[in-house]
Length: 487
Image (cartoon, rainbow, N blue to C red; front, side, top):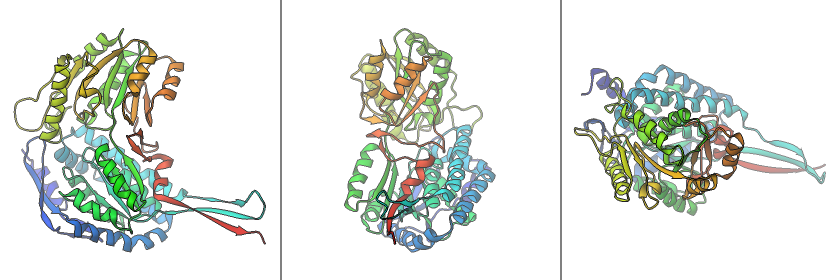
């Protein structure tokens, strides 16, 4: 049931494309955005076609020179105003995310905090872009190394963190002096539309940020990527789609940032503090209903503590409350779609068919909405698909190991390398895991590592480049070297 507050909020969310500072209709049939907890339509919004996408790029190109020439302090102050406005409107953004994506309201509030930090962080980094000046080794001239905005960017964001993924890309781009075309996910576009309205209120000039919502992503993004005026592509999503986008970007030799799939190992050694390990597991697995690229995917637990770890996890899972994210006490909302439920269940049934033991959950509950019960499996066989595919659902699959070497082998036996989690009280072992685990990020005795001040990204087929941290703004800058001969 949509409340009066929700109806009023939805009425304030724009329903058009945002191109060159104006709200416009798209060339396609309207997109229906639904509530995954009920299946009800929340709002109908504009649907961009290929021509709309090029018009958005036209606007970004037209605004590029003036925005790049805007003083870094002026760009910084706009981002800081956006941060302040987001704090004022945080309740609206949290509720909107819960409605269109499904996450519990408390987690949506956490995303507002997290997403806002990218605005604050990169407002501070905007004025710290620097270079080098000095004599060359031969003494024949002076070297000047400077940094310039890359140019117009296409930013493609996912559905699972609709605010944070937008701020994590838009903020560094604007701080660096780049203009952007943003294409949010079809499933959760409302938060991005609401956010660009906030950016307008913060003083972002026309054409600097453009947003196109579409149900035909490939048809709209393809011509933009092929256009020689585009200079940068940033994508967060599946490795499968990322590969295709990299191939397209190669034709124009575009700068690319790719935050792709994950298959995170969660390693619990025999000396781990089990209280911390269980708490970390609940964070790393059930945050965002398990729908995160950083979610723990494979629980690799020492054979001496596996039974107790499984018992404690099962006890905690039994206390989780399923429901619409706006309801009091709910800790597990719906998955984003019926397709997500089917995919999660297929992995669970495959694991059971290969001999896994079901300790909790394992099915969708009765009633409306795309819900799936929090699930715990032990004795997951090596041939199970759940060990090689990203689950993206609230499922814990436990395997055991006998020694450190086996733990490392199991953790690294994947094409992905985004993040790993390790629980041990042995400092030397922890250092060895930092060195040996093939991931771009690691949580040592913690299940939550994301921070706007830290570089987010992976290795292997989990992607290219980094978002956040000192490294984040570099993805939107190009380096220029000039030699001034000695007189």
